[in-house]
Amino acid sequence: MAEAPAPGAPSASSAFTVEQRGIDAVPTAERHGKPIRLLWLWAGTNTTVFTVVYGALVVSFGLSFVQAVALIVIGNLLGFAVTGLTSLQGPATGTSTHSVSRASFGPRGGRLPALFGWITLVGFEAGGMVLIALAGIALLDQAGIEASATVKILVILAAAALQMLLPMAGYHLIMQAQKYFAYVFAAMFAVMAILVAPKVEPGAPAAESPTLATISLVLALVTASGGLSWASMGSDYSRYLPADSSKKKVFACAALGGMVPNILLQILGAAVATVTVNASDPISGLPEVLPGWFVVPYLLLAVVTLLAVNTTDMYSSGLNLLAAGIRIKRSAVVWIDLSLCTGITVWAVFSDSFYSLLSQFLSLVVLWLGPWAAVYLVDWALRRGRYDVPSLFPDETGAKGLYWGRGGIRPQAVLAFALGVLAAVLWLNSEAFQGPLSKAANGLDLSVFAGALVAGVAYWLLAAKDVRTEAAALAPVHETV
Image (tube, rainbow, N blue to C red; front, top):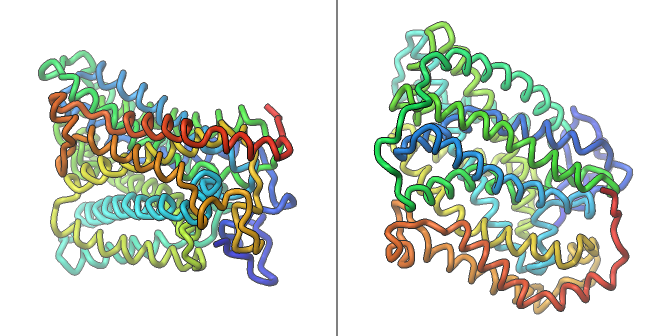
C-alpha cells in the first residue's frame, strides 16, 4: 500500500529534507530533470570496491585474463540491458518497479516478488556492512589498535550509524550525492589502476583450459552480481523523471551508468588477480599490491563506496516492503534493515564465513530474479508501455481496477514465474545445491538464462491475448524517443 506524504510535509524536491513519499505515484509537478541523472546515480553506485572484487573472483575460477575480460563484457552487457529496460516504466507511471509489477502479477500477487526483492536487498546490504566493518577494523590496525571483540563491536555499531543517514533523506539527496561520488570514486580507482598496472601479467595463461561448466558459472555470476541484481530497482529512481522523457535516453543512461564502471572495475579486479592470489578479499588482499602510502586512502575509499551502494539498496528496500503490502513508513524500514544487517555483520565478522555465504547467496538470488524480470518485461512489451496507474493501487481507489485478476492475483504471471523458478532450480550449480539437469550436463549452470526464458515464454503464451486487450483500451503514453 502506498505511503502518503504527511500533511504539511516538506517538498520532496529539496535535497536536504527527509522524503515522506512511499510508492504512491509522484505528482507531475514534482517530476523534473533529465535522464542524465540516472547515469550519475548508477555510475556512483557501481564505482565501488565490491565491483573490483567481482572481477578478481572471475580470475579465481582458473580463467586467463583475456577469458575473464570477455566474460565480464558479455555478462555486463546482458545484465545492464535489463536494468535499462526496467527503468522505462518509471517515467510512464511515476511509481516504483514493484508497484508496476502489479500489472502482471496483480495487486496481491505482486507482493511475493516484492518481498523477495526486499530480502535480496537486505542480503546485499548485509554484505556491504560486513565489508565496511572489515575495512574499519583494518584502518584501526594501521593505527596500531588491536581488533579485540569489543573493538569489532564498536566498529560495527559505528558503521551502522554512518549507514543510517543517506537512506533516511531519500531520492533527491541520493541523486545529488551519487553524482559527486562518481567523480571522486573514478579518480581514486584511476590512481589504483596506475599503481597496479606495472605489476599486472595480462598475458598469463589460464591454469588449465576452462570447461563449459566453469564458463557458464562465471557468466551467471557476472550477470547476476551486476545489472540483473539492480533490475528490480530500475523504476524506483526513474519515476521522478517527466512522463515525456526520451525512452532511448532513459535506457542508455541507466544501462551505461552501471555497465561502464562495472566493466572497467571488474577488468581492474581481474588484472589485480594476476598479481595476488588474495585479490578476492577486498580488505586484506588488494592492499598487498598497493604501495604503503595508498593503503589507508584505499581503505577509506572502500568504506565510502560501500556506504554509497548500501544507500541505494536501502532506499529501494523500503519501497519493496511497501509494495509487499506491509504498511510501514519507509524511514522505519531503514531501521529494520539496519538491525538485520548489524546482526548478520556481527555473525559474519566473528565467524569468518563471509565469502562462502556471499557465493551461495548470489546463486540463490538468480532463482527468482531472472523469472521475475522476464515476466515483468514481457508484460511491458505486450502492453506497449501503457499502464492504468490507479489500478496499481486498488486499496486507495476503492475499486479493484484493471489488474485485479482473481482475488487480486493474476494466475498467468504467478504460474509463469513458478515455472521459471523451477527451470532455474533444475539448472542451478552451487555449493548449496545442484539441480538434476546441471548434474546431467556435467555441472553446466544455466539457471539465470533457463529461468528467464521459461518464465518469459510461458507468460507470453498464457497472457498475451488478455494483456493486449487491456492495453488497447488505454490511451497511448508519451512516445518521445
